[in-house]
Length: 339
Ligand SMILES: Cc1ncc(COP(=O)(O)O)c(C=O)c1O
Image (tube, rainbow, N blue to C red; front, side):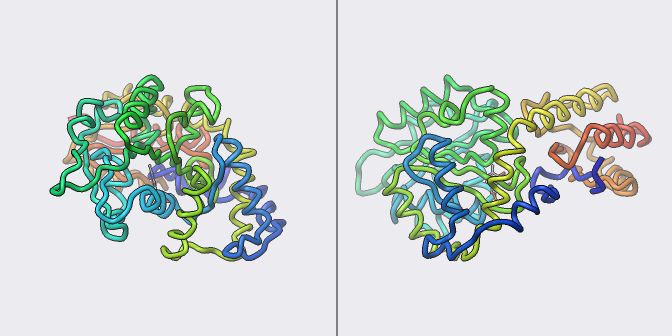
């Protein structure tokens, strides 16, 4: 049992384990802006091979990796199609527009997290002087903990390419989809021209994302990374944590999925409405008038959660089953939870 508090706010809250810290301390390093860091180079080569792409690039964060990808796909006055709920649209401060001069065309997400082909077809602008040039379709997997259906992924990427669009995947949690679907990395990202993969979410590294794609595309992204202030020097200490996570923390994501299902079942048994989780993220409805008192009640028991009327709870590697039991007990002890 680990000593950290019970933190259900996100899977980004995990701390590096002793094994990961030892790997970081032992990392061989060099100046990565000059391409001289052997551990970063090793991580990039590993990720390109693992996901079936020519090249890969290590970034400080998912936000920076996605933004550099959008800027490498699209130029000034181009447009990307993206879900209303997508991280690259909703949660990255509009960086594509602010810093990339790229117009987002947000589209409604379907309940399964995809965007319908009909909606995409209608949104692709004709070649006309009045319109931005529609260049790219950006999707996310997992999205809100949901796994994109593989048949949809095949159809939508084929459709995008047939209509002259490139395809980018925000795969911040692609390993959750891989473990859930029991497929290989290459299958999981089939149809995408580029993929951003986070190491600092469920995999438990302290920082870093890797963008994979064709060689020329990654060369362009490397230029943008420098402009965005993302050129790191002895980044091998972080790449070593990423490599450790890729070796040790992928298959165990199944434990997080099982814990999310267990937590959902326990909350459901208390009479709460819970959306059954597909991976490590679940949503539970909390009566609005109970939000402040429940937040305080959990905090008093050392449980951190962002309680809202639609509360998101996230399981991760610092939350073994006994901490889920403690959480359920705390919910049970809260008076008048059900209106
Ligand atoms: C789906 C998704 N994409 C991208 C990001 C951005 O990652 P970062 O926080 O490393 O910038 C996040 C962060 O939580 C995310 O959930």
